[in-house]
Amino acid sequence: MQLEFQVRYLPLKHTFTIAHQSRDVQETIIVKLSHNGQYGLGESTTNPFYGMTVENMSKVLAEASVRLEDLPFTHPEEIWTQTYDLFSHNPFAQCALDMAIWDLYAKLQGKKLYELFGLDPKNIPLTNFTIGIAPIPKMIKKMKEMEWPIYKIKLGTDDDLAIIRALREQTDAIFRIDANCAWNADQAIDYSYKLRELGVEFMEQPLGKDDLEGMKKVYAHSALPVIADESCIVPSDVKKCHGLFHGINVKLVKAGGITPGLKMLKEAKSLNMKTMVGCMTESSVGISAIAHIAPMLDYVDMDGAMLLAEDVAEGVVITTEGVIFPDRPGTGAIMKD
Image 1: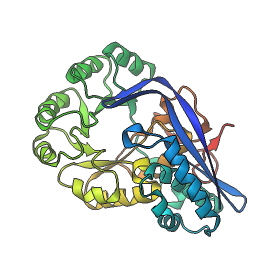
Image 2: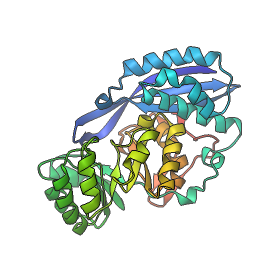
Image 3: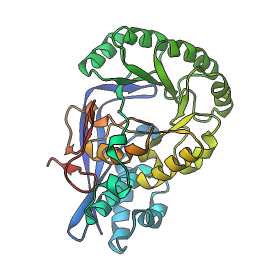
């Protein structure tokens, strides 16, 4: 196998702000894995909050390229295990490689990735469209620019309820809120009743990831379901979240790719928890990979490419009527240049 990778810069339509960071341009790494005249593409964004940088991701991918030259191309799960020691401290880079392996694996069998998993794209839930933190007039403007049936509203300010009330005056769409660890337990419980009256479907990660005692309280008394994000990063976290959250939001980049992501989703389902996969403002390379596993989900957040001013790739097209897949095997993603 031959591994290549490149750093690309994704300009956003608007400054994207959540409780702990803001950005106007998203750095991302695109991986290309070649074998037997075919290639697969994968992607992972950088993320300063998790310490994932162009430098450390590039370093480990360069090390992996040497390892892969001597490995036979087998099943993606086997290659994930064979390279895990290199990526144990850099799941973002492993995610980019794992996506590329699955893309290549499906291409070599002449199948779309969802076909390989035995999934039906008609079962894909509609993605939400994310509105990042900004002054209320700016948040309203962003919402009006993209009329959508479901919005995910980023919160974590001193005016969270005022934000939701103001946005609710503008639309009848379903709201989901994501506080990104910004609240305490009493806040979350109090807000949950008011948010329910304002048409909010669920709350994502209201408390800090390690506030387990607080989450016990929220889980018992919240008027709304709560979904884990920062508290559920890797497969071993799923069981820990059972009884604290009603569902999990799996980020493939944090987990280390599709391979561990599928394990997390299957375990959550076995525990009767709701399942969701989220994104990190990836290009259409990363978003296309998410779309292929989306039929197994209750909720999905795959609007990353929709938030970009310019995409570096082509792949799935997301509409309010459903997801349009390219007539190509694998994930269907290709680079524009």
